[in-house]
Length: 97
Image 1 (cartoon, rainbow, N blue to C red):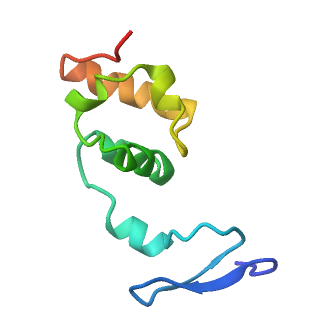
Image 2: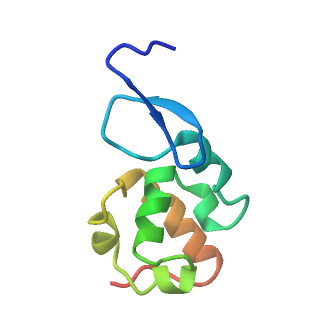
């Protein structure tokens, strides 16, 4: 792994990692807190954090939002929508119109 243009950082748990951006997220901590199951486990870390930061941790709560509203969250991209749609449908929910 090249460390050119990357800064060595240390998280609050003492993990050392390199980042080229100001993003404070430790990759090791993020991997440790990734859920093993449920709809949040299907998402990338930025998309999962986007929902968590907006207190959306259940499909019932997710169903109260429209796709357009979800896409406005920082970290949420269009690639996550098919996964979210499928998870909602499986439990009998859908995005708000």
